[in-house]
Length: 177
Image (cartoon, rainbow, N blue to C red; front, side, top):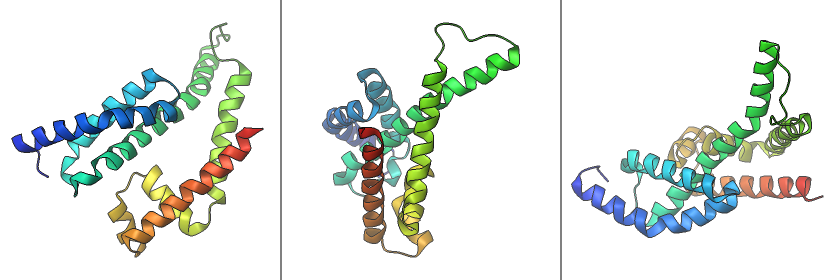
């Protein structure tokens, strides 16, 4: 799909048709409406910029949802690192932690969450882990991942699906109790 006048109209139609569904998914993924709105807007901009990569209009909603999940992931990752960066900056400036700054416990929790996620990724079977890292962390296209690994697109999708399911299961178990 080229980004000409017809493509703009088609994009607007597709975005209008699917943005509410993706927004609801992002509320769950991001944890609040404000972040979900920001994520959806950024995802729509990215989708429009990369519209030429969309091969099938029927795949627009899952494609947009995947872009939005990546944006949400980055937002959460940035939020997890912010307390540590702020603490480091305060220490460099020789200042004390103000009452409104994240507590040391909050900072430890953010670090723990990052460690748990890293451990969960490392625990994936190698075939699943490499697909997950290439698709969800490095943001390579599915086609690109399949070609680089020398596997079919359906095999790549299956491994990615299984990797995500294993990660969800491990993270749910870790944070359930």
